[in-house]
Length: 465
Image (cartoon, rainbow, N blue to C red; front, side, top):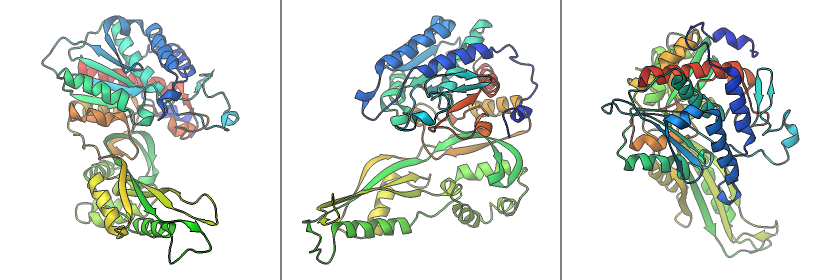
């Protein structure tokens, strides 16, 4: 499918035909030129780039900055408040993030256009953040500016949060913004963040169906370190085993003993939503019998590399280090295993699983970083209905289903003050430009961006005015 063919999915809905593609494109283009790269080591981050981006927003969206209260969180994140007229209504929150991942050193020349150029070439806009996810920041700010230009005043309070460190866990940005709102006693009706999006249903046995997946759940995350200590020495005198051997045996057992698959609530609802558009076997039969034999379907999905993350906690051996030379016995060996945690598991249960399977009391097996799975958000809510209705209004023949994030977003931090947290990127460009998130030649298709912005305006208007 090329970029022209994707427009067949754009509906001819008459609403918001005056959205200004040039204004959006120029705002996003300039936003990309600010190198708001986030790093675990915050000393590497360019604070002036973030502050420059803030100033750019003030210039590009003057009504937003006239009519909303702006709070800067930890120097580089932004929190906006558009006050509504009815305090009995819970506020809505629209969010995304300002930071981007770095360009991998040595790949700069692989880009067809410089990564931070923001170049506009016809309907294509190039640069880091054009997909992930300055496009959504600009889309949400433009939607608010558009409604203000039309003279709208919300009934429901609307908040916007744009974090500066989502790519490095979001603790100083979105989490801090949530804590700020929590101290003020704010309880939210719903949250809309990045995530989800459009794809053809081929991998689910529905090759003719256009799917829009609204993610209602995020898998958890845990890094488990497996360590062994020994005297070390010369490799000519290894004895009956080495620290590396002990660790290797343990991590081999853990990899061989994968967590079992389950049809969790999210996957169940996703496939129930797909039932009428699935035409291929064996998916058709599995989904028809999902209530009577979910175990068989879970096992089937788990055999596919791309679908397995939907139904179980994944186990990934990612790191190991030991001796500095081939003829030196290591004194300390350390391996790290990364798990992405399904709804039925927790950090605590994964750590216990590793210790039980390794079955070696001489090893140190510890959690180095962990985050439990998110809550599963309700799909019978104001926010989910608005997202689904707006998507169906502006995209022809789309089937909307709930889904799950196998990675992570900042949205999960708002569960303390909201039961309905949704992750959805309403732009269809990934279908035609390839998956360039975090990759070389990240770019977006401007007509798709404009169609998605119409959806954002619709969601704001129907839920908050």
